[in-house]
Image (cartoon, rainbow over all chains, first blue to last red; front, top):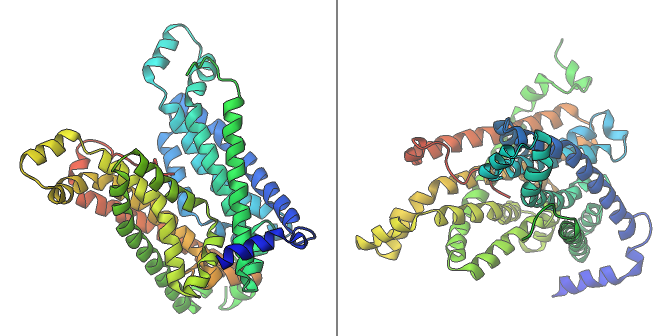
Length: 222
Length: 232
């Protein structure tokens, strides 16, 4: 109770929101870093995953990339970048580490989504004389959409949660609020920081769900 | 090529570092292994009853799965900091945090494994006079084992990676070597500890794969084991 109340007091205090170490600035950094990382990861993983799924090749590659990705600690990758010349490249190390973290699950979900499209539907479409491109855009992609979107949603939440690790090597983002509270034994501030990250993750998840509902669905009457 | 050069030159790869700090490296690796091992084992002990609970109906499964998924969205940095007032600066803190994370994957896979047991098999066992306890131990759990072990593999590998973040409270195994080396730009130490971490994950995965094959010889006849690669 005391800690939750303290966290609320911390969040209600306007002084904590302004300035270089304030919530707004850290929130901006967090959104910038995780948004950029997600955009790059999607630009790499979705075309490759969807295309491999369409071809039905490289399944072991897609699955193995995902397993290897799990084994690589984001913190270690970030630390490696921070002792390399990239150290002075601003947010580049954080973004690069997060991209490496986000690509495997996105790739695997895109691939699996395409492969789980009912084969008989694909065969029927082919029998109707659809070309490979038509098959990809009009049949497979709309049917794989659910799983691809699930991958995107869980990927976004994980990237937003993981971006806090940047604070451990002195980079920006909401993690800085947590480490600052940790270093000064200010537990309410730690709780407030965690709540902010969770709120951001839930907000992004909500936006993605809404976007998925609003976007037109090709030929789906469900 | 003489002795101290690569340490002085701050090279990425430095065998001198490995030999001169072998004790430090061994200690960190041992800490890493036991923190991960304890976390996954405790996670398993908690996850199986939770999966049994989730199996009782839609409402149960929805609440159990929502709870364990929500746990996964808590940033690891915050998780370890938040548990600090409860446990102090101890390994128990890191283990507790990692157990909570492992539940997401373990509960899902245990549930998937239990639900994949064919109803006819259950009926047959009941018809042979198996009670609920014996049915669970001798029929359902063994049949759920492939999916469960697939979950254990995923959980172990990701726990090994996550353990490094425990270095924020000084109990991060190999992460303890990475965190201070960033500030001092000690390249060899960061690279060596990171590589060891990945090797540890690969070794654990192979070991568990061997265990899986040993414990479930029947899955080898019929292609790939089920429930693999579908974790969150």
